[in-house]
Amino acid sequence: MKKTLVTTAMLLACGTAAAGDYEVNFGGVTHHFRNDQEHQDLNYGLGFGYNIDKAVGFDVGFYQNSNYTTTKYALVRYQPFEVKGVRLGFLAGVADGYKPFRNGGWFPAALPAASKSFGPVNVTLVGFPSIGKTADGMVSLQLGYTFGK
Image (cartoon, rainbow, N blue to C red; front, top):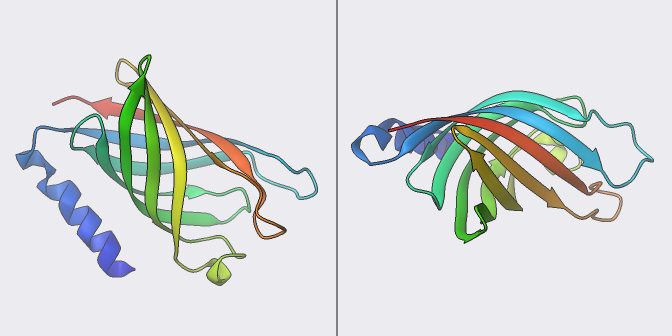
């Protein structure tokens, strides 16, 4: 998994040669579908991204997850569709910090995503359904700021 983080970081560092922009992500707020567990709904964090274009980007970062532990992540954003200014697609990569998945170790992850930009401010909505007793389904609203070209 260290190779994945290093590779993603190298892609971000090489980004100055491409015609993209950079983004800082600040975590978000989450709503869980089941109330039988105590969750933290404010998931603050810090992430950095490089957007190749409107449809493709790379992100690395960390946040305080809903289980009160720190999650680190490296992912690719692919949102090739746009409907009325909302980008649609998915996020895919690796994350850690969730005990039900590989005892808190790194695991592959993919989530549907919808994003909308308001000038330099970006809002992204992600979510997934509950998966048995392993994962409580959720929707999460995340906030970012883009620095132009």
